[in-house]
Every structure is written in structure tokens, then in C-alpha cells.
Image (cartoon, rainbow, N blue to C red):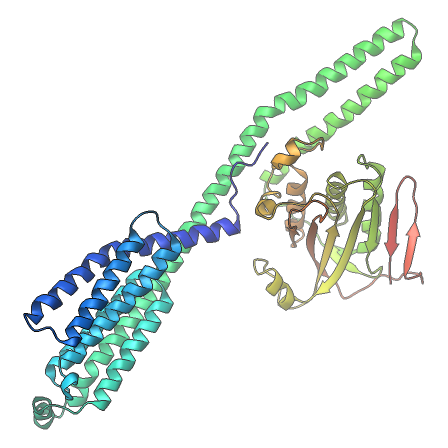
Length: 489
């Protein structure tokens, strides 16, 4: 079955960015008429006398209105909306500063009109908060705060303000009011912007989870719809082979009869594997397995899994290189780890050309390093982990499809069109096993044929090691028809 939609982390980031762009686009549609009205008010309030300062305000407001109009017309283009947002915010801040400057500081004094006009700096701070970006609020608030403090410290007071100070001795409180208002508004808007960002992230996460659930449900329905075909064909083939075997037996053709019986057995084996995959659905849907972890020698287990895979290698002989420390011990469950490694090695063999090499390696990794490489994994603060990697030289996996391949029933479109047989359950079983082992698994691939894929399997380590005899650094072991290379230290 083909994957029709891809709910991936990269898509999640794009959705989050687009949600922010649409929010800014909506705010700009509201702010653009406000800029035009402000420009008209400045022109009308100036009457017939147009000073250079008034002309500057009109030019700034007009340019900002034009840029905002350009940003909101036509299709929603993120970079155009972002540019229009920055220009609009800068224009609102600059026109407010020019208005304040014209109210008194232009004449070299600081009076009550200027003090009242300083409260207008709340407007660009509020606009920055409406746009929803914390960094915009911080930058705008710092600029407004800096301008206000500089004006209060540098400008001499008018007589009316000096009179208030001499009468009530509260001038410091009066002068501090604009600063207090700006700082308070900035903190509230920063909190609001942070909350809005978190809420937007939650909404996008819910949407992505819903999309993934629909994705899996769609693939499950397709799987169930096609299971009749998958089961009917092998059952009919077994019936036909048995009928032919019976006819050949009646004719005395023992060799032909044995051939038909052998073919029937092969089809029955395929049917058995298919039924095992179907039964795995129940296993994955029930409560998480509870297993008892115990020390497991990794090299010996990997060697057994490699032997099992090579005996069933239907895609031609492959070389399996075990680049593992023979003393390495992990905390795990032997049965689940054997099944996990067997499935991963089987996949590597199925999707890579004959005569290519599959490498199994491992390294110790500290919890701090693991948290940096894999932030979504809840690593313990103490102890140590083992990063087991299974690398092949096969077709690779497109990066945008990588998160989906661990879901039940998932097969890529190219695999459906190929001769590779599969039910889409192998990697889902692997993930279920790894979760039961309190580990993690993911895949790295650029999707280029020949570059292959590397699966990372994270398991807990122990402080013990198993005794082994002295062996050469690299040893080649041939187990017909296998081709396994074991390297130890």
C-alpha cells in the first residue's frame, strides 16, 4: 500500500511556521488601515504648516502603509509577510518617536505634553505583542525604554513640572510612570506571546497526531481490504498443488508428485509467515509487554541472528560484518533482541543488492551525549548506553518517510511496485520490542540508492563483561551457506 500523506517532523515545522505567517498576515490586515489613518491625522493636524518633522512622519507612515499593503495582497508569502511586519513595526515606533520629539524636546525642554506622549510608546510594544514573537516584543520594548530614559535624563524640565516637584515632591514618581507602564506592558506581552506560541505548538502537535492517526487508519483499512487477496492466492495455490500431487500419484509419477508437494510446502511456509504478521497486529495493539531484563552478550546474540538470516537469505549471498567488542554486554531480553536483530538484518538483506556488506557495530554512549543526539529519548542521568548500528548498502529510505516505516502495515510505494515481499509489520514489531526493552530506535538515510540506511538501536549497558578466550582482532568465520565476518577485541 502506498503512503499518501507524510506527517513528519519537517512537515510539523513547516505547519508551525505557516501558522505564524498566517497570524502575522491577519495582524497586518488590521494594522495597514491604522497606519493610513495615522498618516491622515498627522497631515490634518498640521493644517497648512508642514514642517520637516511632519513631512518625515507622513513619509514614514506612507511607506509603511505601502509595504504592509504589498505584504498582504496576493498569495501569502512568508518572507513578504515577515518583511512587511518588520517595516510596519519599525514605522509605528519611528512615527511615535517623531511625534514625541515634536511635543517638546524639539524646543529643548521636557514638559507635561511630552510626558503624556511617552505613553504612546506602548502602541508599538502592543503591536509587537500582537504579532506574537517574543523577540520582537523584547527588541521593541528595549528601544522604547532606552528612548524614554534618555529623554528623561537629558532634557531640562519646564516650569510646570518644576512647580509640581516643589509642591508635592513626587516628580520622580511622575517621571517614572511611562517607564513603569512600558516595562509592565512588555512583561505581560512577553508572557502572552510565549503562551500563544505554546498553544500554537500544542494545536499543531494535535493536528499532526490526528494526521498520523488517519494515516495509520487508512493504511490499516487498505491492508484489511487486500488481505483477502493475500490469503486467497496462497490457499488456492496449496489446493492446486495438492490436487496436482494427487493426480501425479495416481499416474505413478513419484518425482512429479514430490515436486508438487514441495511447492505446496513452500507456499504453506509463506502463508505461515503471513499469518504470523497478521497475528502480530494483536500483539502490537495489546498492552505493552512487560519483560525482565538481564545481561546479554551482544556479539554472540548478533552472530546467532546473522546465522538465522543468512540461512533464509533469498536475495543472494550477503556479507555480514560483526564489528562488535566480544566483551560487550547489554541489558535486554535474549528472545526479543534476537527477533529485533533478525528483523533488522532481514530488512537490510532484502533491500540491498547481492554481494554487498551489512555491518553490525556498537559503541558506548553517555546519557548526556545521547540526550544531545536524540533529545526525544528519555535517557537516565546515570549509567551508560550502547548504540548498536545496522548499516547496509541498499536502496536507502527517503528522509521524509523515515518516521513512518515503524508504523504497522507501512510499505513505501517503491516497495509495493518491486519484487520484494513484505507485510509492513517487521519494523513495527522491532519498535514494539525496543520499547519493551526501554530502548530507542531510529534510522538515518539520505534516500540515495547505494548509500543505504543505518538503523540505530539504543540499549542499556551493564558494568560487567563476559569472559572470552583470546582471539585475533579480526576473524572470518564461514558457516555454509553463510558469509559472516566476526571482529572482536
